[in-house]
Length: 404
Image (tube, one colour):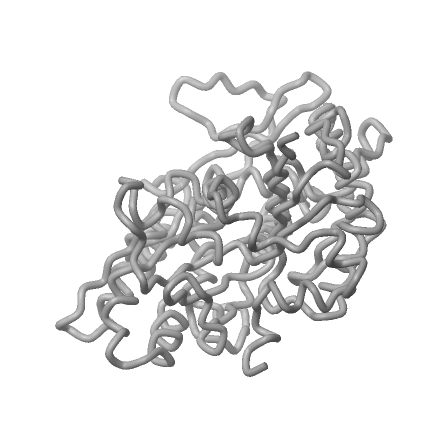
């Protein structure tokens, strides 16, 4: 009997999951246990779709600062994913492909093994980082008949951090992987502080402010010019937008005000001026909030400088963007301009952008799992019962196995 292959892209904000041969597009589920003060209910992962009141939500996140730190919450969310309410799989007759954080700690990796083989009793599984799946996808080769480039650099700007990951012949070059301590969570929190200081107190409104960030913010191509435009006329300029805050008592979601939007006296308006571009600017200028780190473009240039000299030109020409922050309007154009200024003049700088950066790792995992040799990469439950986590360490080559 053919076994189900379950894909679980276990991100810090959301889980992208599905079954090979059934789910071309993933089911996106919050990776959190969420408590709503509005309807006084607690929602575990997939149950959040039933929530009607998003005011003052309290998030219990299994993943903090890039690592799984709350396994009780993670198990509750995974239980729901594997249940008949989402995937409806018999784990004992299934194979799992799960993503893990970059530079995951060995003792946390051992807990992954224990949960997957002892708690859920999967038949076999494969564990890797999101970027290591990209060579199997179509980010760098939309015509899938063309093989992927041997040298590529994946920029994964997600919830907790932004990672720059060089990949050579399908293998991550771990000594050149770099981390920028700016991710979607920091940007949302920074926006909450700005808005709470200048207008409404939104410190408890993480869900609403995250939606404001995703619908209003953009990456500026000329930061000083846009800042001056906002300063010279704060209320009437081409950048300012008005966001109508939601009214859940009347079942009205929040939205950006359009020319034809009807606004009543009861509506609360959030004016988004220079906040629209100063928040995403932190990815390129972390020192704006005191982070002693280089911006994304400089981090990429530093990563490439650590690679073999004769291959660096190919890495400059194959830069791919994944992760939710790549959805910011103007992100690729700004990065292209900054990288062009840093790269040697005789080398091309080419940036590839996914149609949906959030689900690109899932779609790449889907193609990997459909390969005939996929099962050879997996660790089986029998191997785990015989050798323990040593079986995983032998097959899953990561940063901790460098030099062994």
